[in-house]
Length: 402
Image (spheres, rainbow, N blue to C red):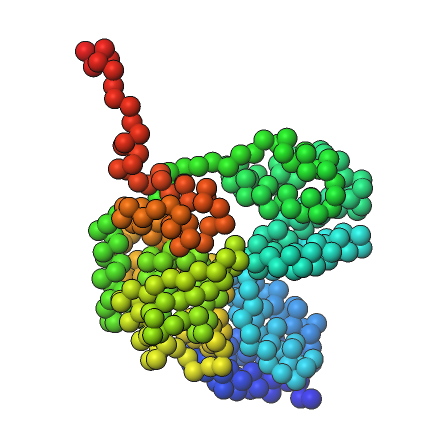
């Protein structure tokens, strides 16, 4: 196989064009290919994986003399395609998720334990997002043990639990450690180490219950008005934002929504919610239905993938994660003139719940709509119902007013 950069680069560019990539994106690839060609030209003229590693490590911009994130991204992206092309003869254009799931243990015992935990989560049919959260925390603990010379769980004591949690405080706020504890406990229970589970409980980290943030009525109206205009917001972005605002769907459920989940005649969507595995059927209000239909008929890429929402640029794969939904809703908020930086599905979900409460909807109904496994989970939304909260206030005693 011809392994010159020019030949390999031509195959990559041809694959990109066939997949429908934008010319601006292809131009960035071609720029990087030229840089790689200059680099390889003085080192034998043929591309190798070893040269690719060195090239990808050239992350310092010659113009500024500083680290360049864009250079690292472009160089690494091209080297990944070149390596795959040399090894398999194909150009893989699937979108890689960010993050990689965090650091992984290296000892045989912990690699085996992690694999058993992964298999257990699959057997329990946990949602993908739940498995990712549980798995990342478990791997983080195992890596922490290895860093302290422990490669068998039998040698871990209660002190390793507090030590692991304390090691997270450089990147986690203490008030947020509840989520780590929540994700950590199932793994410790799985290992059968009751002493470690008890140690986790003795740490005393409790969940805080702040008053939830919701959108002001005027901001809701701005977003709805922007979503109603075909010239202001794309149909895809409008449909996604309205789904979160009008139905309270979680990001993971919006991402996983399939064409077969939509009943156009009855104007509803029916799905199994990823987090709770509960089935739910939700009505599609007129505006939401119109923007969704416009996206499917006129804007959605022509592909065999049955996910409703796809990337607008090639490769036309399903949306990646919660961060993607946040970026989309941020674009809509900006177009609508709303400056709230928390323009994510969580804010929209809270707002949907608050509007249901304002309409005197019963808590069991709201719980069903939001897909809560327990009705107690819905009670937190009472914190945004100012009318009902005011009814709980005791009158000031007469003596205190004088």
